Amino acid sequence: MILPRWVGDLVMSTPMLRAVRDHFGPAARITGVMKPMFAGLLEGTHWLDSMVLYDRHSRDRTRGFFAVARQLRSDPADIALIVPNSLSSAALAFAGGAQRRVGFARHGRRWLLTDPLFPVRGSSKGGLASRFRVEPASPAGHAMDLAAHIGVPRQPLELTLATTPVDESHADQVLTRLFSKSSSEATGANGPLIVFNDNGAFGPSKAWGADKFSALAHFMIQLHPAARVLVHCGPGDRDEARAITRLAAHPAVQSLADESQLPFGLSKALLKRADVLVTSDSGPRHIAAAFGTPTVVLHGPMDPRLSRSDQRLLVEMRIDLPCSPCGRRTCPLKHHDCMRLLTVENVRDATLTLLGNTTARERVA
Image (cartoon, rainbow, N blue to C red; front, side, top):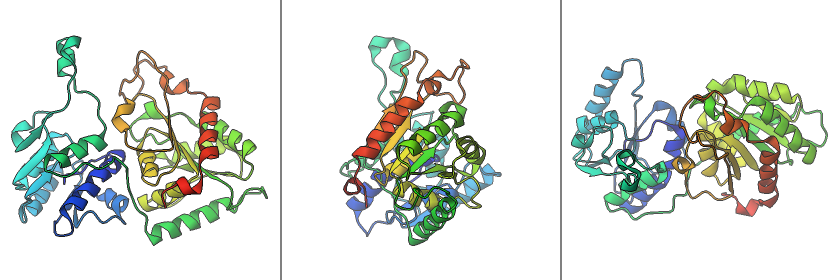
């Protein structure tokens, strides 16, 4: 399997991974080709027999490509499921000697595929441009389509991940260290854990902003005095996380910004424990979904259909604007209204609804 290069897309591929393993059983040898950093994301799951770690954006792209192709060709696959739609992904499966190469015929790569699938395109009623436009589709459904093509029965698009004892121990240490600083006697280990995530790996157009997240933190602490608010971040989002805690200026609002290591295992364990997550439309929302965590998603420039799965306990918030969804990394109109007009009060109400309606029995163990 050639797997996606974005966190969210990889997590949305887990229903397909599960379905393929369930169908072919333990006798099948299943290898996943993925970015090195994603090994920790899938750690604890048992769908893959081996991983080939490859980043096509590494320093020496050409050498890396042919090194991985030689590795794959040394034991060529009977079937390659090519989840990304890039030309390079199909080229890697071709160069790696896979007998059957299953993927969507996009971006000029049809000739590299033995089993091309064709995406749904727009209606002819919309004119010539509409007929050639590919309709937005979730990577979860897209990946399941590939599996179904080789005879795998479709499964629900329920995302799944796992944690390890090391992940859980790391989360214990982080939460104890961060929230032992709280001067509020009401704040403790039994208070609800509310996690914020304003991840901007895609670009600033998805960010809600430190001022709004800090205001939301104050609302949540006023209404739930025992709450612990944890600002999640990745290695590239430390400054944004610090800005939220600085503006909140409350001991019950802490962030991961000063953690020396931010492995995926820590993110998984913390998002698994969250009583509710408030997040931009980014990878951590899908990690949370894989553990059944109640989630409020703040949609901005992206079409919500691109991130759909069978997640329960989900509230998606979006402002319907003529310019949205634009899919841009930065707002081309400079106003950022798709995120700016999502009010703190509306997000607060959605968060409180999820927090109030969720019980431990509804969560994934």
